[in-house]
Image (cartoon, rainbow, N blue to C red; front, top):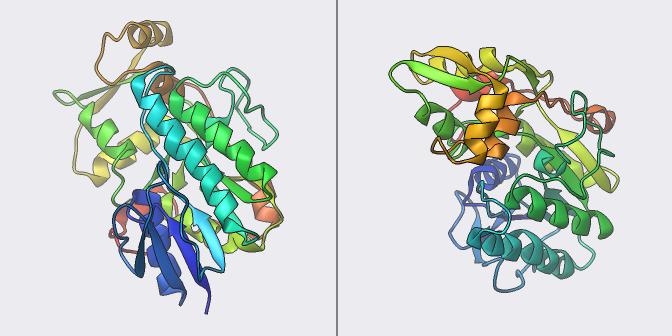
Length: 296
């Protein structure tokens, strides 16, 4: 029986992974400040101490401090403590065990062309918030340690506490304003990410983009999300220059340079490297949103 340690197992991605691993017959050790949905709880605060990985054959590191905080903000220190220092502690404690690190497409430098992003796209600079900066630093540590590094983009699905609530909260009086024209975007269902995590232990060390089988047109994807939540709204496009100005000067709550970048510029991940290892995404937007929170 595979014994798998899942960090951040009480969080969005980690809880889906823990359920999927248990459903597949694994013995699951849930590492984090709070218990996970299945298995054994192993207390761990990534910002404070090294994790206890005794008894684990495989480590999947999902724990992260998320949030769209600008570089230099007080929250960046917390993100660095969890995302960078915590990852360093995890990698040292793994002591030869295989490690799958859940990174993010936010590590990619947003200043270059991202109409088709390969894993060698620059990650060293240009990040629009502290999350991107700290995840990129952790990503480099994991690669240097010989881990398998997964880079999903805009992870969504049942129980999503970040992307979908943020989008729904921006609907005002039946109207949703989106920056710039319609574009192509890669999205990653949390179920596809969980599948990738469970198979990635057999992949060669390195970075792998993880996304749904095909990119989505932004406006159509947004309409699908709204319909799945019973929300009726008209979509209107705000000129990109105006949206960027509003984001830079904090004129609209929740609209940041990072949010504008995520919504207004095409970002399509090339997943060919993962596909060569057998990655076959089973889920897409409609099926993922229709699943129940515990579905695997």
